[in-house]
Length: 338
Image (cartoon, rainbow, N blue to C red; front, side, top):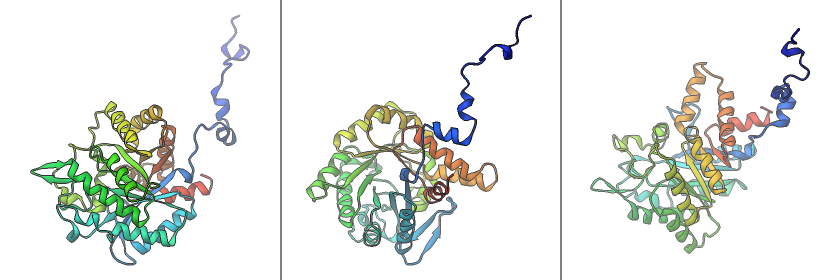
């Protein structure tokens, strides 16, 4: 009589479930791990003192005055988070067509960086180099006759980067997507004596629909109106173009590369990491954060577990580190043995 499959000795010989049978075994064979070392906390700062204003589209995220931002950064450091990224939400009265406030050495970003450096040691400060928080039209560059001016914008970005470095910024992160700005910024920083200041380039920043809550947080949504940024941010249909952008920025002196947005662009993250073998970061942007928070609040998924899974996806795709608004919460969970 023919033997059943179960009676055949050793069937199946390869049983992948053996390594999944227990918690300790899964831990032992895990290919990727997430730790606080992988997290970068983005923070929104605003004028005032002891001021904490909620960002409506991002539950749990606030615009903080400088004093409260310093406290939050101290908390991040205590949890082992190695760096924070600071973004300004400035008074509408300070915005103009030329982004004049961007090059004010006493502007909100410079005040914040100086205050952090005075009060918190051994945590990296990343500053955004772009004009959209400062322009009355909401664009990342100067505008003339409806056109975003590339070279003229880069000149202002160089001044902006130098004053941020002078205030104490450790990493300059240009998010503007103007052509040639990495080389120009490197030259400007070096000429001003800031050879040690790193550049993290938003090399592949896509014209994405996932930025809405961020634009609301920094106050550029109303200014931008019905306009878009498609003449300088990348077309989300393109992949090979991202490799060209990254190659140029590395050649011009970028120390690190940032891909934005995050999860919808894990393929880009993977291709960049495999092609260039340089530090590559990813940004879990405001829209991604808001979706998980919204679904979690409705009980449609487990918020904590969903964030953990999504952040692990960045690591699996090759991210050196991840910008996430959930950094504080995740660092706490990881410390507790998530």
